[in-house]
Length: 492
Image (cartoon, rainbow, N blue to C red; front, side, top):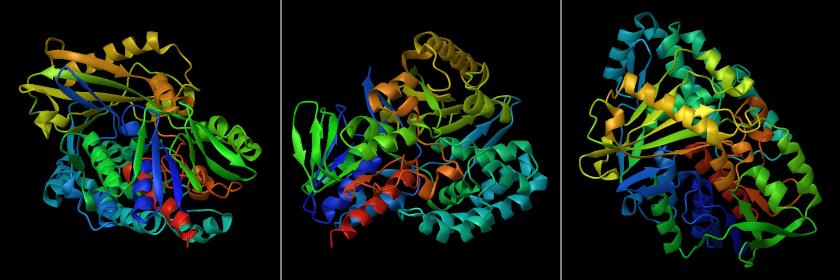
């Protein structure tokens, strides 16, 4: 393999392109939008910098490894700083819980919130460490290409009761309902329902405790920019603003890609970081096997979408930390509305991102930038007119922020805009406007997820949220390692 094309300059595509170029494979990275980043896009408006997301950076060693492949240091391109607390969790009754990996502070928070569950939390942490070792360290960066690979992993999955949900397992260790929510909400950050996502995803708790939660100064977009700079220094080529319209095939082999402008890029291998349904259904129209796969993919369960309200505000807000989770009055009922019933409820939970708490340069002097993110059903479950629904939900979110955090919010707004499910579908070709691709349930994990290499087209590969191991920065960067090992191993 001398030449490779990677479609999509999100975290997964960039990480894979860096690995291939570091190994001496001439790699072209093609991005349809005007900027790299995929879901980690950004906007600059009225002096504010708004990251689209993701904004929770964990497992920094997986990122540092990309630079080490060529003997470089991530610090040459990106300044990562720790964030503490990781999250401030709050409930409508005024209860607050600061979640971090500072043992002294965390024990004090646990003793204040749920004194009878301190020992239960300690045991949960032991469980989380076990699933982290088996589910992430051993399996998280290894491709599952056949059913036997799943069979080999089965004993460890059984040992950790992977068929149970994260919430169910957490509930076996702690009794306080608020603490159960605090220890199970993490799967929402990768598109999973805590009441249904496999207990294996409890590994996120251990991953955060060991690696911390970090911020890239200047925004998540600066981490993307650093990855682009590394890739181009290695000799890689980035093409922006010219979306791939077709993956060309000859028999059961890909020969390259074509773009909207008419450009043709020949390649010995193609890897797609684009949405998996879009890749199979739209880019591989000339392949019968791909069309059969697309039909199967469309029947799978997809993660919810997101409604994101971006705010540029006058003033500073020292009482609002970098990351907050504002739980609503319901947990189980709200999750059922989003995942099962396809309802945009009057109540909701909010992830509030306040980057200027750590990085004042994200806003003009004397100002702050925030975004309020609310999970909502994807377009397949809630096919409404978001031009009508959006303003209603935006007003509800603003009212909740006024009530719980910033009473004079309206007078402080300098600029605001929303990003809605149809935007995910249009800008990212995300199937059903899903925010995270396939829902991370057990029957859509590992071998049951889109394979890192196509079963029929032997030089077609996948990377990113839709393939193994799944969404989130550690997941998609891990998928890049698994896919690169396949591609480079077959190159030997």
